[in-house]
Each structure stands twice: as structure tokens, then as C-alpha cells.
Length: 637
Ligand code: ADP
Ligand code: MG
Image (cartoon, rainbow, N blue to C red):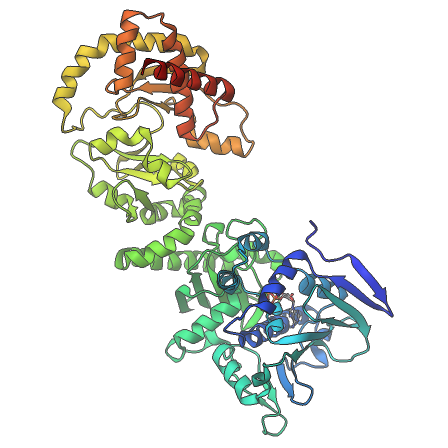
């Protein structure tokens, strides 16, 4: 499906009629038909867009002053027509061209949209919560309006355009004659939404949600001569911290981040040393839809002396901190800095270093002081920080210290320091297992022996775990050890029943040797080795990677991404204490050539593969064998 709604449905008298992109249709249906309890936020959204448009014009005018010359006072005007039942929100910002209107108000160009629409359930209560997090921006106008008319003139262009829609399926675009620069949005209110014709009500909404907007918001028809400015109209971050309420910070966050959750962390600082800048940064509470989408936008915005420069200043934040939102306002950078030269700018680099350290410092504090709160952050963004361990050697040590993991001991997240503190006497290594699914990891055969010895195993289920564990080989002199690779020596760690086990072992080792011989013969090239396992206590067999080979889970990931064609051979480990293995061992001693040994070897290998989440090499052969085995066992009953 095309992401653009650029097919003409019809053209009549110069007016083009176009369909909304399918995703917009879904969003609009929801917006129009659901009883959204917070309809007043439409005004916040329109003002937020108007403010962005003013910011963008001011930036463009740095290099092209003519764009702004005739009308240099940027503002947002709200007016009401009680008789006609309309409200108008107008800005004299950058404006939209014909194509901008189609692209911006006919599609949702935002990354993560597909994922969002996929999550919609059709249950309107649930969907409203989702939409609340996603944010509908401009389309929220249709919560209160049954017809929206947008008239826009892009700065520097001749023609103005009128966009109009009733919010169901289609919109029209018509060229019109108009002088003013900017965008003029008229909402024709639905029945029952008359409260929004009341200027006092509008004033209250603006004060609640939009006071932080740096451009003046003017309200017409309040009784005051002409228009009245009803917000503070100064950049929020320039005010002293003590004068800013939590709600004001939150509303600013909604505007700047285009997110609609609570900020998990708010960081407002003014640096006044050799480097002069203000930062007002936020960490969201919930994971944005596009966290792992390469096309994502909305990081940290850069301002120079209150003038907006760029939306998504990647130079200010490393990719592994891409969850940070907000603004940085520098006093040192030149106003005419181009977006292209930001990367090589030493001031930007220094600010970046300072910000990384500040954010890390806050995270470190939270991890110690409020672990429950920190866990919320970690669940949302831990996987992103882990990318830094892998990519960024400068911060690796600090990030490893900050790392939190699930483990076999309880549901609480543990740090590596926690782990090392509670290591068992005689334990020399930090054990971990990685895979896709937490429950499957907890039930993995490879950790049975460790769990039986009360040894903690870390459980990793982010794909990135495979990568950072490749560069962090040890922590506090303790090696990090995957339990699915190589041989594990558990002899220094006792199990309660170890003594009796020792006796049994010596008795049965002969038999097991014959079984291993028979299995090796049966499996041939399918495995790299068959050996006795020290990691199993219950399951009969498990697979592990050879010491020098690529680990099991990493190999699967690479295969899924088509970055690997061949799968390396595994070691099949067998558990001499398992009842089945014991009987088989006795049989192998008695009659090494018994065909049942070949069949069982193959079945057990396939079983082990299934537990790993791998596919069996020959599914029909597997099920045939399985059926035969079952038939035989029934025949005996
Ligand atoms: P967002 O603001 O998160 O990008 P919106 O749905 O609010 O999403 O707006 C969509 C896009 O439409 C904006 O990104 C912007 O490009 C454009 N737009 C909306 N309102 C205006 C406006 N008043 N002036 C200029 N462009 C606008
Ligand atoms: Mg918006």
C-alpha cells in the first residue's frame, strides 16, 4: 500500500478531491465516533502546530529575511464566530504548499504508524487509550468539528490553497486568492460542542495546555480592545525552575516530544561556565511506537538564543539515547549555523558530552534511590541503552554498571553488581542464557544444573544482548559465561544430593560410554559431539554450542535476518541421571547395535532442537518416528 494519498479521485472546477490514506481513515473514524473525554485538547494540538510553523519560518528567515519582512511579528490568533458556529486558529508561520497539504493533512507520515494501527483492536475504550499515547495531532480537530477548512499560504510562494474536509474519507484542495502568509484553520463546530464558542472557556484551555508556547497566543472578541495575548509568550526554559509547575513541564513535554504520556524524568539545567546553554530534557514513561524504526524522528531540538534551528538534532544525542526528548538552547553557536555543519561543530560536541553525562548521572541516581521507578524506565528503554554498551566504548563501563537484567531469582531486575554480591561460594563466573522468550528461558534445560545448585542465571531476551555480551567479557574479574556454549564446570558448586550422585555415576559410567558411542554413530554429521552433561538435572538431553563457535541464540538471530546461511553443528549433551537415558544406557551396554538406539537418538536430537526454538531438519521423519514410538509403547500396555 502506498503511504501517500496522492491519487486523484476527481477534479472539478479546479477543486481536487482526494482520499485520505487508509491509516488516516482509521484514526478519523476513531476520533469522530468515540466518546473522547478530553476533546478540548484539539486546541492544544492546533496551537502546537501553529507554534512549530512560526519556529520554522523564523529559522528559514535567517538565511532568507524577505520571507518574514512584511509581517515580522509571529503569533497565533484564535477567534470565534458565534453566529456561524466557528472557531479559527490562525498563525503567520511557514504555511503549507499544495503538496504539503496533501502530505501533511492527508497521510500520517510519522514512523510507527503502521505499528500503531496494527494495535488497534476495534474496542473503542482500548483504542482511545492507544490513540491517547500515539497522539492524533491535527486530526483531533474532528473531535469537535464536522467540517474543517484550512487556508494556507507558504512563505515565499504565490498561490494559496484551501483544504477542506468533513472528516470522512475524503478532502478537497482548491487554489484560492489570499494575501496573508501562514495557515488559517476554521473549525465548524458539531452540535453539542457550543462550549467552545465561549471565549472564557477557550482562555482556560489555552492557560491549561499552551501557556508555555513561546509565541504570543491572541484571543479575539474577549471584550478587550482588539486582541488580547493570553499566554506568557516566553520560552518556558528561560524561566526559573521554581516558577514552573509540574503540569507546565508536562504540557511542554507533550508539545516538544509529540508524545502524550507523563515524562518519566525532567531535566532542566542552565550551564553558565565556558559553555552557555540551557537544556530542558525529558525521558518518556512509555516506549514510543517508533523506538526501533529507522525512520523515527523527534529527538532533541536545537535552539540558538531562543531561535529554533532543527527538530531532530542527532548530533546532540547518541542513537543509544534516542529516547531523550526536549530542547537545548545554546548561547554560543552562531544563529546562521547550518544543519549540515552541526556535526563538526566543537560546541555541539561539548554540549553532547555534557548532556550524556548528565542523563547518565540521573539514571545512576534513580537506579540506586528508586529501583521500582528505575525498573519502569528499564523496561521501556533498557534495550536501547544496551546498544551503547556495544557501540560506544567511551561510556561502556558506566553503561555496564547501569545494566539491569531479569534473573532466575525472583522477578526483580538485578544489576551485575547485585549478581556478583550474591554469587555462591566457589562460583567463578557470571552465568547467563539468552533467547526470545522469558518463560522459555526460565524453563531451559541448560540452566537446570545451575538452578539445582542455587546458582543465579541472568536471563537475556533483547536481541542486542547477543551483541554487547560479545564485547563485555567480564565484570569485576568474573567472566560472563553463556550457559548454551562450551563446557561448564560445576564441580566446585555442590548440590545437596551430590554424594549419592557420585556413587551412581561411577556405577553407570560404563553404560553411558556405550550409549554415547551408539548415539555418535546414529547421529553422525548431525552433531559435533555427544557428551555427558553437568548442566542437566531433569531433561534427558540439551544442545549447546561448541566453545569457539557462535552461540545458539545469536546464530538463530543472524539466520532470521538472512545474514547467515549455514548453521553450525551442536554438541548434544546427555543427562546420565535421567530415567530414559539410564534405560537406554543399559540397552546400549547389552546390545550396542539395537536399532531402537538409532531411532531414539534421532528423536532426542529433534526434541532438543524444538526446545531451542529451531526447526527439526525433517519434520515428517520426526513425526513418523514419534508415532512409531507411541504405537510400540501402547502395544506393550
Ligand atoms: P505533528 O505535529 O506531530 O507532526 P500533526 O498531525 O499535528 O502532527 O501535524 C501534521 C503536519 O502538518 C505537521 O508536521 C506539519 O508539517 C503540518 N502542519 C500542521 N499544522 C500546520 C500549520 N499550522 N502550519 C504549517 N504546517 C502545519
Ligand atoms: Mg502537531
